[in-house]
Length: 272
Image 1 (tube, rainbow, N blue to C red):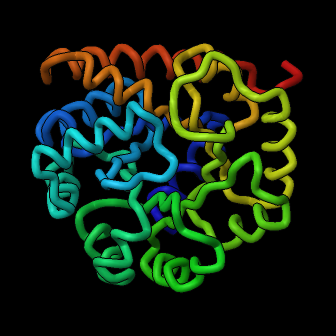
Image 2 (cartoon, rainbow, N blue to C red):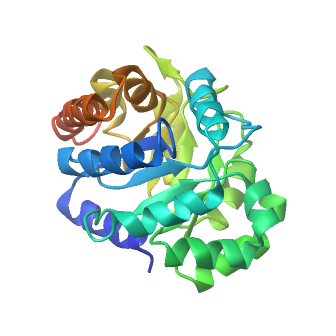
């Protein structure tokens, strides 16, 4: 059982929902990335998604794309994210997962990447561009290493395919709330709740919703149907707009606290 599995067992036993902020590694620098992750944990985050900058992201909107480019322009290298995991121990006890392109994993070598990431303290990887037809080998390796392989389901994914994706995933299933790219939104699709509830009946995996969660209001709307919520662009924007490391820590802490409060005070189910 991976650290992600253990977390969701604990949260479900307590009737609580996970909050997962996303940070781009190296934006504005690795020291700030470490500090804001620690701040997020202190403010109530349960796990954290750490983005591996990549020159050709396929699902990220302009805010995260720009953060990736800034990190790459400053010379980001994959080894830095491995070093980050080690630096955060033992202060950060929540599970950390990477958001990483399959192209990077493939280049490093599937088993090598998983073993390196696990040794660095990561509990899993979210791989947005991994086709389910090609997921078998990586899924098997991750299972053998107790390392979660998180895959994405979108609103346009055929239901039969959603079931196949869930079967080759572990840790949790990442449900993309909207068609398109990441970014903050003020409204979400009307059929989102029904779609997630259907998927919940097809898998025992926790379902975490991401894309479009802009703050406490959208978090509160989705908390009743989700096992966890992923907040990306809104967090990345606050880090960038802060201007310096101390301000980034303060702004992230305040924002995560607000979203945590909204999740915890949302109805426990849609009938409440």
